Amino acid sequence: MDMTDAGAWATDLAFAIETARAAAAEIARFYAAGGADIYAKGDASPVTDADLASDRIIRKRIAATYPDDTILTEEGADDLARLGAPRCWLADPLDGTQDFIDRTGEFDVFLALVVAERPVIGVACHPPSGMVLAAAAGAGAWMVMGERREPLRLPEPGAAPRLNTNRYHTRPADWPLLGRVAARIDLTPPDAPRPSTPGHFSPSTANRPPTKPISEPDRRSPAATSGASGISRRRTSSCPKRAAV
Image 1 (cartoon, helix red, strand yellow):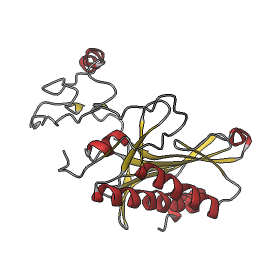
Image 2: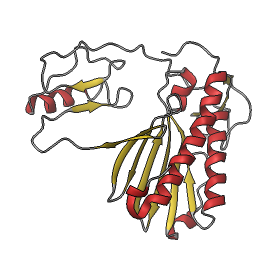
Image 3: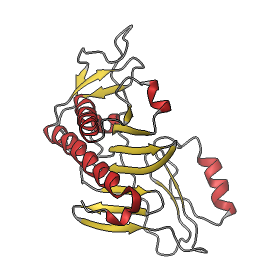
Image 4: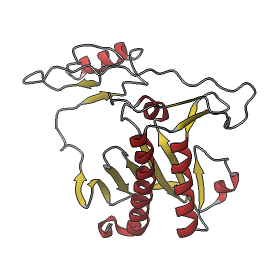
C-alpha cells in the first residue's frame, strides 16, 4: 500500500499495515472455520491456535524484512536485549482472545514500532472486517478499508466533548465516577449502565437513538493445567462455530 504521505515512516507504516493484514487474514480463516484449539497459559488465560499462527506470521515477516530489529510479542519470550536496541516492534497477535473464543467479533491484531524509545507507528487490524486503523508520528492517522483511505481527525477546538467507556474493563464498577465526570461537562449517559451496554455519553439528547443492549458473552476461560509454565499443550476446549453475537 502506498503510504508516501506518512513522511519519514512511510515504508515502515506500509510494512506494518501489510503485516497486520496478513496476520488478521490467518485469524479470520480460523474464525470462519470455527475450530481453533484452545490452550492455557501459565497464568490461566487462554491462547488459541489462531493467536500462535498470527504470532508466527508477524515474527517471520519482521525477521525477513528488518533482521536487525527486535520484537516483543504477547505470545513470545521476552528478550531483554530489546531494551538497548534502537528499533523494537511491539505486537499483540490477537488482542481479545476470549472474544475470539466467544465469537463476539471484537478482537484485533496490534502492531507498533518504537524507535529510540518513542512510538512512531501504530496499526490495528480487525480480522472479521479487514478494517485498519493506522498512525505515524508527525504524519497523522487513517482508517483503511481495502485500498480506500480516510484521514482520522480530532474534532475542531470548541466541539462538544464526548466520553466513551470500554464495556469490558471499566464498567460497571466505574460507572458512578464516569457519571460524575459526565455531569460536570454536561453530558448525558446511556439509558442503562450495564456491563453489556456500550458506554457512550452524548453531548445532547436530541435525536439520540436508544442504546441497544448487546448480549454479554460467556467470559469463562479454560482451566489452567496445574503447574503449567508457559502454554499447556493439552487441549482444553475448542471454539465451535456458531452465530456471532
